[in-house]
Length: 84
Image 1 (cartoon, rainbow, N blue to C red):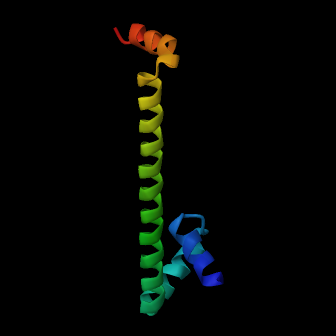
Image 2 (cartoon, rainbow, N blue to C red):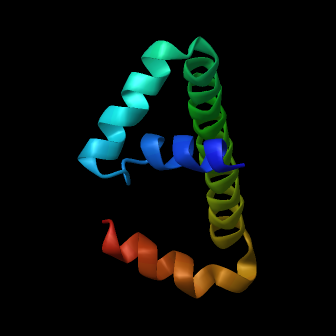
């Protein structure tokens, strides 16, 4: 677990410069550590991408609801006036 946390701090830039230097040296020496770091970075990117897609989906659902349901007619009119 400690290694995973150290990789995380390396990837998110929270290591002190000297610790970052040591981590980079360790990754040069250990291909296993380098691969773990690469996979952890790819995992973070996937999670971020999924989160964005999920958020976009939720925003789209809200937009569809607000602009199609009669109960939000007053809101629709206000928005329409703003963007005329």
